Image (tube, rainbow over all chains, first blue to last red):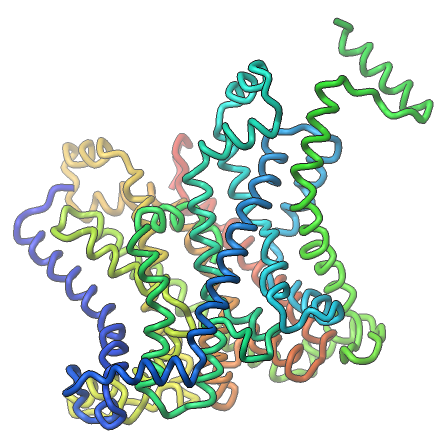
Length: 274
Length: 320
């Protein structure tokens, strides 16, 4: 669609205004994280603090135990994402490429369960973790998330697009199914693996519900949990809370800016799930 | 090579004789590889997905306070929630209002923004980044930020409204404004919708627009007759996904309002959470979770059914 000059200018303006409106809360959060409490509560609002209060960040790290929470989140997210990629890609490979008795029955059963929301299974899952004595462990945070049905489904769709003749060529050259998986399917599915990786990174890094259930002790708080608990505990310390929130956002924003293209395609691909 | 019929016949004979059908060496190797590759996922699926679903089904028919054994009570949980529990109906009401306002408004908003992004504007990539950013940051941080934006005394929102000489509402501290506040906040995260629509828009072939222009269509007509029909499958997809996601809202209410004031933001998932993990009514909470499933399923099916009338699929004559 070609547009006239005047239209282009006004559209440009609307876009810029919209962007400014979206950035506004962000800027306020960053600004508030560097103010004193008096400045935060001032009217009219102050946007540039007189002296940037970097100590708010130190206070957030100390009060909310953010350092430890950052470490916990990093460990849980990394292990979960890598584990999920391995487990799901193996499962997807079997569904997409290997024939064995019962395969289609399993796949049907699996499709039938995909519509059922997480909140239906979370009560039995919780009681399972609880009676196994796994409350307050990394295992409880990581294990149930490794076997993502959605991830297996997404990767299977991806693998199905890879020509089967490549498998046959590998077999003729004396390779086995393991070689096909490792040297044909996986390298050709980087986009799909990347999409799933980013998708689960976001989901696991940001999730609150499951950590709230299975974690009690401060030492194992993930970032969202540490923030949520601090919110309840230090209700009035707006400036410190905003510093904590900024810290929680930084890793996601850095990864997002680095892998922006993959993020966008991951959403376009896997927008299938919230 | 033997005929297929003979093979089938032999297999049937073997089955009748209680023998397993024989596999060729290659097929057996493939099957072993298959079982091997699928076993980690399958084990996880059985333990963490299928078993919990079956268990949830049973639990929903029991009275279970977690420390004592579950006691079977048939459909009494469902009877209670349908006919005796005002809080359940409150949670349905609040959730449905949230979905009804949030889904269409955010669809229109993200479609409009996607159309903008699809133009040859300067700084497109930068704008795309900015629009998408709110959708990636942790919901907990987003919620904490908005608590203070909505603060009636020194929040930026009411400070802004005060510029016009009006005193803004109490937002999340008022039973009347808390739900609208959460809806407004949800519109801030339109990035996901924009990205999905943008991908759809970029898939519309340029020659359709050219043909429409030659036929004398103006911008608005091109939008109505080309863009919308071509985009309709994506719109349906985005709407269904948004409905499913919106029904499961939890974090914002948990952090910002704790379901209040006066249960004004007691969303269904928050009510499930309370029943299960604050009051330990595991059976009742499971019944509520199944209701969530059924509601979402029925609405999704209705939307898919209605799509026959408004979604245009390429290659079908007389669609749209």
